[in-house]
Image (tube, rainbow, N blue to C red; front, side):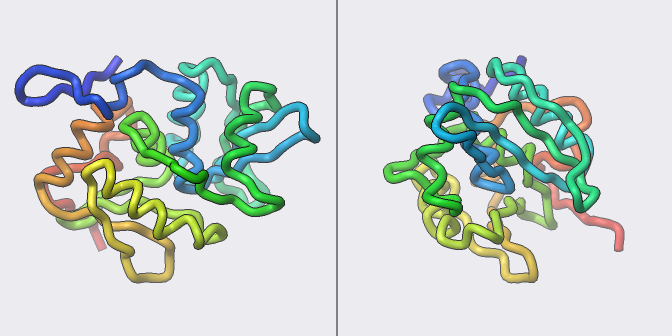
Amino acid sequence: MFYCVRVDGTISLFSAEASGPGLADLAGVLCGPGRMAGFGRTAARLSAVVDEPWRARALARECRRRGAEAQVSAAECGRPLVRTPFRVDLLPLERRWTRGEEKVLPDGFRLDGAMLRMWVLAAGSPQGNGYLLALDPEAPETHERLIKALAQLGVPAKIFKGEEALLRITGRRRLAHVLELIGDAPVGAEPAWPSLVPVVRAG
């Protein structure tokens, strides 16, 4: 178990441990590469194609902590895939996050530490003196609204210009706040966790 404790010893209201794990936390995967699929109007499932096998394994563990079994396999493109079975209790997520065939950000969406932790596990990586969060390139209308959601959480971010859809968080205080919100890295995820020390990648 991880804890997100302020310097005064209290747990942040928006930290990943503030209210215990729940299915609503899986919305953090949808901030990045996650997708919902419905089975008629009776059930839905969450899936995400990620870059490294450890991400899929970590997300599967986090899904299980929330009572949703998840399997790790390979997507058609060969990248790791984590996917839950179709479940009735995932229908609310599917209804809020999809409109027809498109992924949308729900009206009034509020990000919290548990969701941000899932987003970091799915698509976060340190870069220089900052931190990058991958967005869904196929859901561009969610990007600006996710920037606003992060700002409401006290984590200002900007679009990182490049070939991929990424947000960049910079500043020691902001990164410290991210760490406060998401807690300690699970085993194996340490290299991808936010760091207060500038990260230099081998070229």
